[in-house]
Amino acid sequence: MRYLTARKRAEGKGPSHTGTEHHWHMQVSAVGLAFLVPLFIFIFGSALGGTYEEVIATFSRPIPAILTALVIFVGLQHFSKGAQMMIEDYAHGTTRKALIMFVIGLSYALTAVGLFALAKIAL
Image (cartoon, rainbow, N blue to C red; front, side, top):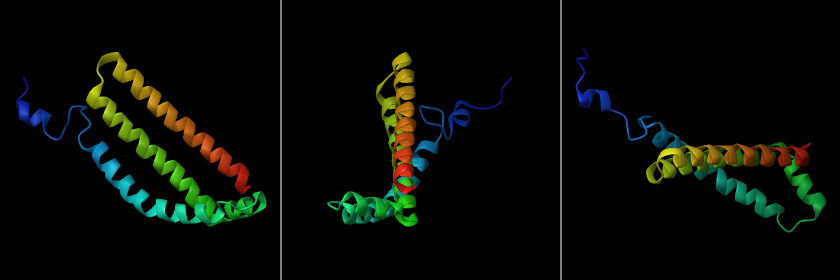
C-alpha cells in the first residue's frame, strides 16, 4: 500500500515526466549561445569574403576553431532539446516517438558533419 498522495507523486514532473530538466537545459544553453554567437559572428564576418587561404588561416587558429566547435555543438544540442519539447507538446503516440528519434539523430548527424568539416579545415 502506498502512502503517497497523487500530488506528491506528480510534484516536480511535467507531462513528459522529466521535471524541469529540459527547461533548465534550454535556459543554460540559451545563455551560453548568447555569449558564443556574437563572438562567432565577429570571427565569421572577418573571414567572410576572404580568399580560400585567408579563410583556412582564420579557422586554423585555435580560438576561432574552438569557438566554432562550441557554437556547432551547443547550438545543435539546443535545437535538439527545443524541437523535442515542441514535439512532446504537439505529437502523440508512435508519431511522437518517431519524430523525437528523427530530431535527435538529425542533431547528432549535423554535429558530426560540422565538427568533421571544422577538423578538416583546422588540421
